[in-house]
Length: 608
Image 1 (cartoon, one colour):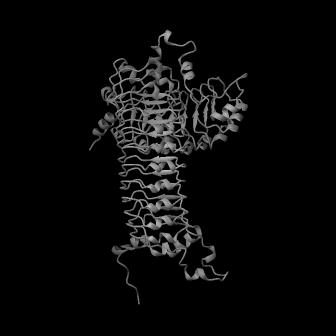
Image 2: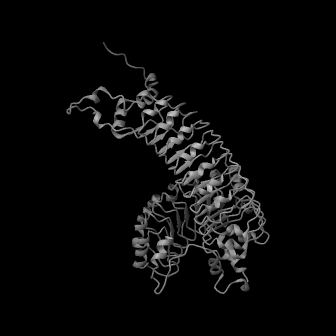
Image 3: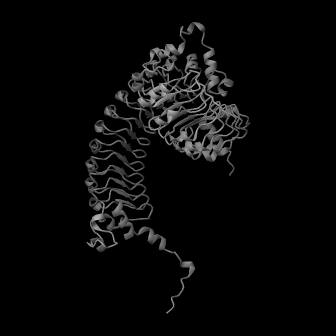
């Protein structure tokens, strides 16, 4: 008997959903062999019972003791250690999760789960737990039993409080509680001796416990978009802290951070700070980024120069009428953002020409009697317990190996050399330095042994050299965060730079770029691009939209004739510098209003 053909109109109806939501025996068999099971994006409303019993209920053929059998064998089975249930429609997690005691990784993000079973506490081997993007309103105290937990992601839920269970997670390194409704943080957070990254952004936190200052290994603390009016003084004892983000709060005074000697990035924008005392700036020898935008500050103290490593300062939308002339001596400063201030003592045409013009003007205004005999910069450095540079004694290439090992920083700038001496690089490699400054030399290629630092180098300054291009091997620096290539002869960058997966900031000012290198758009970690004073002709909006955390973009003094209105859709931008180009719109008056107004203006010009 002939089978009737299936009407093409009905082909595939319901089959895709059925197949997608079903968990095949073949998939389970593969999971038994690998110890990993990925059931993400399958429209699952509940997890099939056979998943929970994957290491209990074996198929009949698996029990066959014959060595000749081609079926899976019970002795080849591996306990399930990784389970991904993300992006489904799960409303609950079964108590049978207890049947998987070997789990080390559990990802159930992007579901609609409202609560967890108490059996979650039986997963004593779990190291990484992702509960983000669900509908959790509280977490069971049994979470505190997960003593081996290293990473806990709970962002984008509806949590209102965090229980005392938090203090039991003594091995926790990464904790993301962002985008919840948390009002308070438990005081026993001080017990988290391994915690390195804490994200509390977009909550309702009003105060922080003093114990936050006892989290000795804390490196990244995000408190943005909360209701804080102050920070505990004890936070100033966090000498491992590298990044502190307090944007969008109600903080009324500059926090005391006098012992945060490792702090590199400080974000205090959109608060209520009205004053900066000179004492507020002491003890921050490593600070490179300072965001004070959208506050009520009217005076920048002369002591700002103690921030000898400062590279970017955002003072937008304050009440500043002038800057201290001594800022002109700050050698590392690359970006000064002043939009939206009543600058009565600094001409607008100077501001519009960009940071270098501002610094040059300020430096020219220092009267001779104000200059100490050895120069202002030397005077400043003598006041600051800054990171010492590599000691040079005798010949120009003699290295103080002890100092190099202690500081992890090689400073070999302004030597006018076309090659870096072998013994200098030998010492740097031996010390495993993390920062290398080779600026103001005559280099046109990378030192041969620099690649040996690819696993530890985080900051590289090659500015003021003779580079026309970079070698393809440059992409090996996967830990690099800061790259300075200003004042060279570079016209493009190699595609291998996509390997710089940790890059936060790149400086390309004063080169020969006719367009921004496209490889930059493939590095999603980039927050800052400084490319002023080139020959860039156009703005690639699609490229910038691929950079999800881009905050600062400096394209001043280029050859840009048109600013596409779609640039306004790059809403992550907090500092956009476009002055000194050939376009007529937006007008200078619009640019002077600051980045938020500029982006809003551009969006209003998008054709509908």
